[in-house]
Image 1: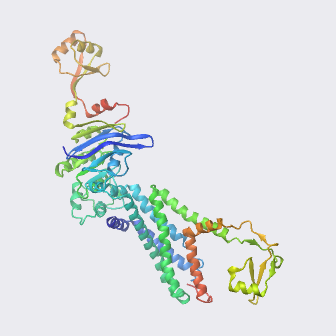
Image 2: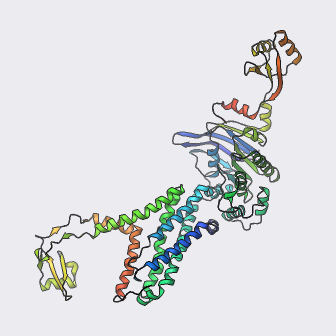
Length: 304
Length: 283
């Protein structure tokens, strides 16, 4: 498999605190790679290191097979665009001027692609409106447009949907999917909003305390998800006894609810419970979400 | 580098603050020209110009930090040293534009009286010396603003720097001007008359004369030389002695504010060279 980005024991320490600890990750070409982790897990630090905004303490990474520290990494970075933390745009300029500015930095010979880029991110009708008067969603999209100047093959987005309204989130999702499908742009996204990430990502990297806990494809993740039936009963103690006798795995959630992790014969289960004097109040099938899978991996002490 | 400079030019051209400060600089020039009581520049006060320059450079670089736009350059593979070099070059360019905006009203409003008393060489000095001085300040402000990522803090440091240099330069200069000996009220009390040979030696080869010589001019314009009596002279405790004197002098010379003073002094010197002072004419 061709990898756009690979890290090899990448470590970044702030004094004694390791923000990244011997991290190994692999971003396949053409993927939408979802970087998942709690606050302080090291997601932004990782993106900053790849972008060259900071230097690693030890370890290395290769971007398009060019090792960091080599002369050729600058050329590899020209194939990359990124929006780190906040959109990096000149607030006193129009959307078009911002893109022209970036074109000049890259030394592009013409501004031919700018109208198309503005259309792609849905900012073609902003005219002379300054970026400072844009909504947060528009700023995010302009930030992505700036990152897309020069037609990069690899886009890194750090929390791109933070602070966006539901419509903005949908627009952002559509934009990322469009870039990936129509322009074959490999995308790395770090996000806290795991549900949203699960609608986009083809690959996941789960970070905790600066380490890569797990790296897997969306298909592998799906196979790991455990389907279950969430049952609401009058007494979970009786339910537990019945399920134990049937040798079925379960998890008691409250005094009246429990998750049952197996396909059981519902009639037999209902009959057994009725015999014990326990009522079934409701039953619904439930798929384990990326969120619960993430929490089961890294623990739920902090919010993700 | 050329790409970065082109982008800088594009950014500055679209910055309303740049145009505002250019106008402020031109106003500084008009104000200075109208308020200058003499076309000799002896009361030249160009500190407001440096305040304008400091504000502009601090805002220009600080805003790139605040908006995060510096990141866009690093992400696409531009090295930090190249980025700061481009900032330095653009800072110098801006200072030249501001200088031009400052000098243009001066040239228009003062050219007649100045031309009447100043030789062309002095005007060339004015035309070249001032921009060169401003380059030194622009470099200083750019370095500070590049090192301090907070826009406000960078601006404050630059402004403090101007006034700190002004005060420290005044202080050092005052120290260096202190006389080695403190003369009593009556010079005859601590000086001795000099022989004809000694006076000839002073006039022909003053560096070979050992001792402290004082020269007095009476009302007729006659000069009288007297040498200090070592047994009676009073040493000045505030006099900065070598080798500290050399260090203080070097530090003072290195301060850009001293260059401003030196530049003004150079203009005043030219005035003396150009002949007797004429009556002042209102500008």
